[in-house]
Image: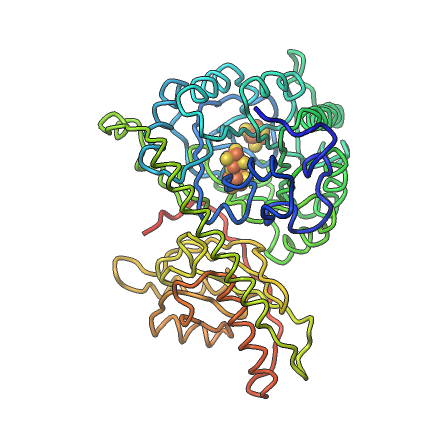
Length: 502
Ligand code: CLF
Ligand code: SF4
């Protein structure tokens, strides 16, 4: 593994607060060796997530702590959406599956172990899988996620296996707050509870993070935002992890449906609204760089973030597949993406250069837009086929990815499902417009009635260029007196199980 100098580079600096240095950064924003690690990792680079896929193998069933947002019958909530039980795999089955996926999906560049329990509470299974993979598929990046309790003891092993990306879920740096999130941990062969448990967990998390930074491993911190428990506290978490060299901070909404049977679900602890989540993320700007494109994916997820192709790769289907691990094909795909990335970037630069100062229009005005996309960074999906909308914050000077909203499919079996429309409108209610490749008359009228403008004139254009071009026209219409800028309301973050893509 090529490691950056300890104490140098973007990771050890913990970011300088620029949005560009972290997940939305490009080759000009960070040292070459860091760029090389993130450029095709869909979680560590926002840009990459439009083009590259990850997969998880569910080889780690056990866990060494208990979180109040987790029910062990389901996948680990740290890195996966509760509600779908994984097919547990042995390391041998996992390696077979990775090779099968890699031969079918050349854009799959990262293998992660993210549960369904804790990757490092199952060290043998985790590292056996990683070892075999680095021999058989050396171009695949290795990644794991952990609650951090066992991390300090595993740092050497992590480095030995060339695991360049580690996620630690850190929900607090104050054990009093931690005691409200973690009822117990299993430590030194016994169960420890209360504030003492949270204190041990906190110290292990901080130590593990510092050790990884010193070894040049890129770290991402996941935090679950739990309103009333750690919402404001996450700003301090952000500061503390930045100090210790975290590359990215991913603040995710609590998922707490009562039917998941978690403590929080059963006690009525709610998750945040879209505005509450964004407010905490925005308050952290200037600290550790933020990841805002996380999809809280399953422990056996396969595909681009936001799509799930795991059903195509069940064990019985893999058995009948012809697996050809074609390194040249994979490299050719990655070169194609590099060219696409450059033209996407140029389109954005051109659109920004065309932005005008207009009299009577607030130069600092910014709005949110929803975008229907199926990848490649383009507005290329039919409204009715979207299972999620990407959310961009647009101003005269920037089109910034700030999140996504999961929705129920509008188009069911060729027909529009009008009952779904109110929930889709709720999910994007804070947006001024929705950019789509195509949209039918009925949803178009309903969106307009809700004050959201449906826009299909930028079909198959790059998203940032489309968003900036729409916004330039929007401002022009205001300048001409054709419309008045109105603020939008809040939106609902959809909870519950994933709806498979059409
Ligand atoms: Fe998996 Fe996590 Fe690696 Fe990504 S996921 S282990 S860093 S390869 Fe990504 Fe999924 Fe969010 Fe995790 S979108 S839940 S941040
Ligand atoms: Fe569940 Fe993951 Fe927490 Fe363990 S670390 S209790 S598997 S959410």
